[in-house]
Length: 255
Image (cartoon, rainbow, N blue to C red; front, side, top):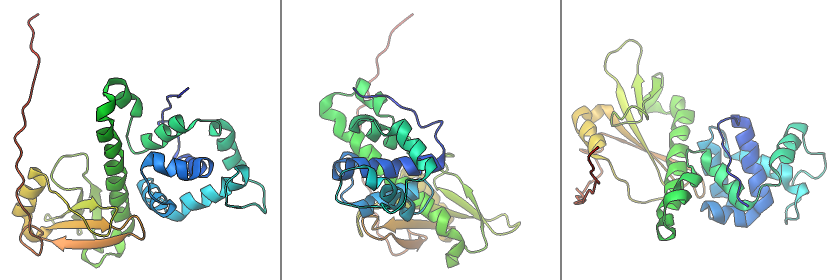
């Protein structure tokens, strides 16, 4: 029976431990359930998305490997650390569906909401949402981790604006200057691929010009690579307008 769990009370360190426990217990089956093609991809996306290093997820997976019958030995020469063992005792019996749902909730995906209202033939969209969500979050966290070492942004203070709907993800200021830099972050699992800007993002990029940067993190499947495009809509990138007509249906009543 699938258990519905919430991640609200779980600390960041526990989420990292749980990610390692999940990958150790369910191995390749667990990878497939989350849409990952390899452990490297899982380490990269889950590690950065949770605001940590990919190696942290790997280390926690190795921590639990001696407890499960998989092909890896893990850290078998010492006992499992007490705080990891505590997480194992609380969550180790979770079935695959419940555990995968818990991991997905770490990036804001609520599988119980989707499954309760969505026809089976439309479930693919909900699964692809998780893939997009974790890739986007991993890219944003990657930017925050490396920003201070990037020459274009060194010395700037950073404000996360992802929830403001202002057409970019981060606002950077240098000292008391009024002008700011706007950075929109995009992520790709592959080394190359297509990217899209929303109408708002494209409009802001057009207005800010050289103060707008597109920060793209690619190759999460192997080793993340960052590419920076200043004034992307007037620079080296060529954007094609993609327009779709959408029929919107609503149901009216009188009370």
